[in-house]
Image 1 (cartoon, rainbow, N blue to C red):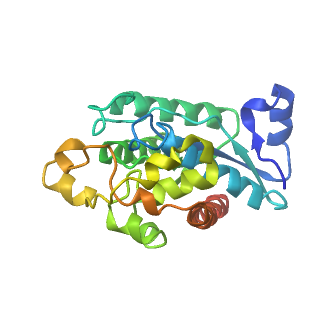
Image 2 (cartoon, rainbow, N blue to C red):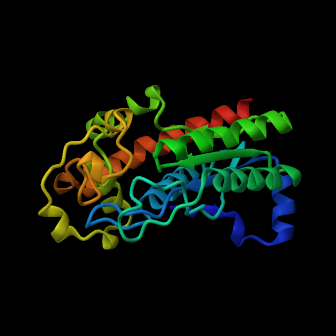
Image 3 (cartoon, rainbow, N blue to C red):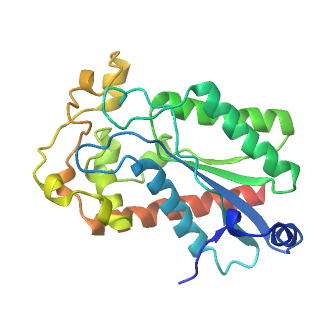
Length: 255
């Protein structure tokens, strides 16, 4: 299996060579958060899912004659308030994240790496809105299209699992399955298997005014059914996510 190309592992002359290549260099920026994912999942779950998607898409396009995929180091911190009452939550403000994203994109554009795709798996509403705003800012100020695989758009949601579609999926079967496929050693499987299902429609709860996990009934910082998670489901979901990302990359290059 081919290994993804990590931009930060290259030398400066190698980056110059990439810009002069016949293949279009597309840079992927994984986004996530550092926040609790139940008593069984790692704090970095969202970032690890984003990175796993990017790595799989890069491998899928490794032999493409027109596109060369490059992975940036992930941005680990996100807007994280709903989990703030639990140990391990480390968040940044909307302004900080917006400035960080814009600055990274502008830096890439300034050196000729203008094909950029943001990949986010932290779905707190303020995070989603900030990523969308940063994309719009870059596009407005520089007249370029930035790729963004926005997984909470309806047409994308419908391609994912039943639990994801239900909105009851923070550290539940959906995310835990992905972690079992990607980094099983980081999942406390014994504890996971003992967890009861906690059905919480997170978007609906947020719409009713709930502003933290505890107010939503997520007293252990999870909802959904983590005990039902499997590595096989996670691998299948990663295939879907990587396919969606490949579609996003190809659409960006065609712009």
